[in-house]
Image 1 (cartoon, rainbow, N blue to C red):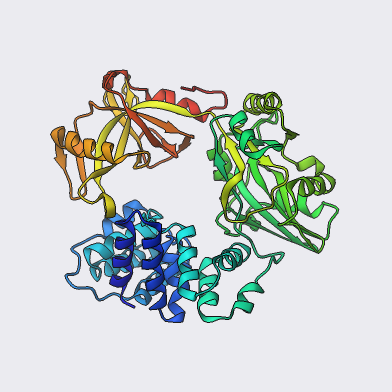
Image 2: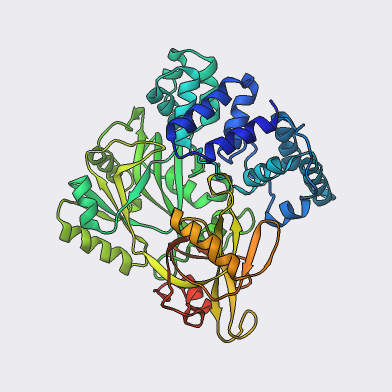
Length: 512
């Protein structure tokens, strides 16, 4: 299949708000694929190619972009093969080899294909083809029950492989997909609420547990063999020997555990998230120890527990791993839930997760049975630039570049602004139209995709925190930034400072 067909489908999906229309467009694409291309295309649509991350960053992608091809000629197989070459490149001369592969790929791509390839490689493909929509499309294309497709995908942890099985296999083969110790499953996700009392109104009696600012892990033990996976199902066993040792010491034969791991300071408190991620991703010498905390058990010694109530699963978890269970209390009392939340925050954690005690483990899904409650951090930042949108946002200025005030000139000119991130989230249609008109009036220069503006507009941004980053001159990047509102009551000189944001890197540091 030509890559152009895939790109045109993603453009159609992006341009509509109708879930039904999205599903039908994707299902039509899936029906036209050769079987061998199905897993590849599903991976591309979700910006998770089968090769995983191939080490291409924003700078490398930008450097490779040249004049686009005038006519489509690339196939899905061509892109897949290029990703294979990028993944395989290593050793002396690999940088030049990778750059050559990228330049050759983008030179053969049309403008739309170039944007699609960049989105896939940078993990920034915004097509509206979320996995739930794509799962529905697989069921439609295969003429199989969507619940059967969804369960097979979550238990296999592989939507591409599930799509191939659903479309080319039988209903019995699809139903036969089950939980296997050693094969990761998609993690259950949580919704959000503004308060513990609001969450309890939804869940009823619940386990109110600390929300740690760590790295999600899923640990499988089969006899003496332990394997550890991330929330994206990448295997990281070799990086976490201390977690392997803990799980080997548990009084079980076979088990699947869900939890978090994080680094601790000398007093047993949590270290900043970036330190955990730095240690979590280290293949080299390890100076920080990662401590595992578990909050669920999905399988125990031959017994699948996905469909058991949370109360049962927690009872078993407390029996096999009492020293490694995340702190929390079971309650239906809003006052107790709020107390647990305060204790979690006082201990340096993010907040709490409120979990209905009667709920099953809905792998791969975000529902109302798990609800996270975290204090929202908001900061007033300055708009430095804005990127043109695509798809439904084509012709509108969308992705906002955000800067923090640097009054002392620690990272640039005194009184200037230091870029700390971007966001396109939280923008209503009205705000998009306002941005497009306002920022063009404030324009000082532009590139092909970006309008740079006078730094005079203040925007209130909600974030989950910051993390260390070499991408921006201030050494930090915002985590999960989203627009709350524009502040016409504030001047840019009243914006929050880069020093305030950097204070969030320190436990107990600055807060809004």
